[in-house]
Image (cartoon, rainbow over all chains, first blue to last red; front, side):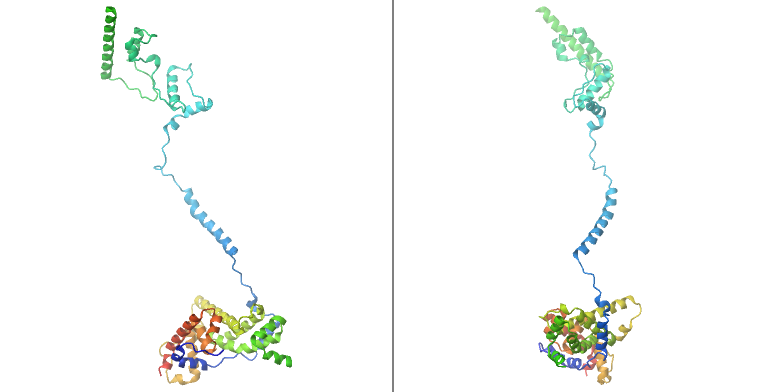
Length: 222
Length: 196
């Protein structure tokens, strides 16, 4: 246990080192060994035999995992409950979905077949249902306007006389019947005819009549 | 008693080996006799209290008795027993620190280790050797425990740097630097003695 000289520091602190060496040696009391052997014989080891709890990874991981889960549960669960949908971020409902409630009922009852209006229902309802069901039908996406064939007139046919099922009187009635207010209350809002459009339609009819007269005169000449 | 005489001639390592193998209490007693005073001196200089030091050395010997099998042959017995004593002494200091934090008034231990930094003793009075020793002990208690331990082991107990490194489980360089810092702090505290 001799001191080895490793550095010049020992020279620098020589006085201090000498004083430290000269410090009186403290000795144990005389009955130290006796007391020690008594303790050993009596197995009186005090706290020295108490085993300190060993640190184990499992002992650390399990409680910390439980605590973490509880903390996450406390922090994030109320936030999830309070989550309010931003109305600006929500997609607007589709018009077809909202409007086709009755239609969907019809579809479900007919198990996917294209819904056609029953013939016996009154004319106005039939027209409405037909339009609604056909407009919302997933099969037939082609829109049909609420124009009743029996009440409509094709000007080309009217002029050329290609429609054999109708005579001129019928045609004229059909055209004139356009003056009557149409009661359809479906998707298109009924608009009262204004005076201007009435005049317009009258001029059109007049021109058609003139054309008819001209045509008849030409036939007679032939 | 030729058998006992033979045992006293054995080295520390041979004695502990005998104690480990045969559980012979005489071997243990011889080792206790060899190390009780050096350990007492070391612990007293470290904690500054005789009764506490005596208890720590007793506990060290009890630990040695109970954990004799944890000693391995490749280590020196002296470093092993100094490590046990040093750890117990450090635990005692920690206990004191905790106690002083919890208590509102300064403890007796704190009062005891108080040292005035500048002119705590007049130089003419410091010539008295007993007083000088007391001053040095007080100054030792003022420096940091990590430095104090190193200085005690080196300059009071006379251990080599390698032994100190083994006891304190630090590198040789750290031992040297800590001893240097400890001595510097100590010299600073004792400048009234050394400025003469």
